[in-house]
Length: 298
Length: 258
Image (cartoon, rainbow over all chains, first blue to last red; front, side, top):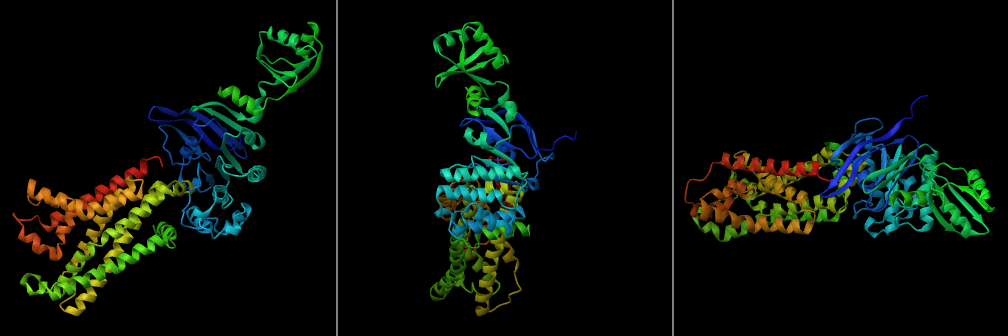
């Protein structure tokens, strides 16, 4: 089988700000066509990572490639980016700012109307950037990233400053672009956001990559079993006597239980029955990204 | 390079501050020349050493000298254009969108060189207009125009350096204006009178000020204590500063986290 094309590949990338190790030998690859979420709490190194791969920050060590090639400015022209904050000439209108981006990218001049309409800024196209609200600035930054239909989108907290309707629109937009084959790399601390749209995730904490890969792989290694019985006190006592029990949490009149071995629901059911407890409720749940994230980062 | 300059032009062509400062400079050079001519006609020309500063070829140096008092206006503009890119973080966006750092730096150096050409054009036109009224041979000493371009480049190199290293435009402009109008004069006089006469020539703007002293040469000659350095020395000092400021600015933009 032909190996899937890698859009981005990081190899042992490290970066330090004085005494703070912002990134510590981070390596992962982003396959073509994926919607790749880079997750981490505030200060985990997400923005530093994105800054390095866009050449605005310099790594202390390590290398990376775009499209399998050594980084080069022409490769960046194939990527639409929103990094940290919307960066525009304050004294210029939306349209003039996008014209400058199009000129630097060498394409997209004829795409300005489409992206401004898509982000609902067409009516305000001649207003100065300095008169825009926070949400409008963010929309313009998204329009800027979409300009010229890039092969790759790199979005750092894309829903910052947007209202709930705006967040839903952007989520839909990202999902649609992913379905159309655009590779999307997205940093966020909004796990719900990532879980809804991403096919892959990388989780960072204090500059260290904790895990990365397909969402199913990252989440699949530990299923969570929800069980309930008439006598919850006895059930809890029984479960706690199991050495393989990793965590137990009371949740809406039942327990959410995670075992360190890959114990099936059937085994749990039998074990409880053999010990005199009849279960009134049993369900296997894939652990939410949030649960996995909190477990990994705490 | 043309493509880079086209984009730099897009950044300023509808920027009001840009046009205001360009207008101030364009008007101020010839106006100052005209004002000085009036004073010279009425007062100074009665003294023998102040005669005929507006005939060719003297007019080139007179106009270059007078206009150099206005060149810091262009320096301020350069500082604003450079610090804007930092304040708006558009330097970051330009790189993200597909410029290399070298292209960004080349574009900004290009802007500085276009400014030098513009200043030189204004000086040449002003000199031709004033010279034509006073007479003489305009083809003599035209190298003075090149020297004035070198002077403008040293003034703007200092501005470029400040605009690159200072994040805040207000502070950078304050330092630049203070240094250009007062600070360097203080330093130069201190060096000349307290250290060694003519050592003041080793300052970044003073070197070309002494290369093109204009009517100020009369006062410079009055206080002269030793044989001054040659014109070549002044030119070499200026070139060294231009290269130094250019290199430091290039290194900063090339290596820094943006």
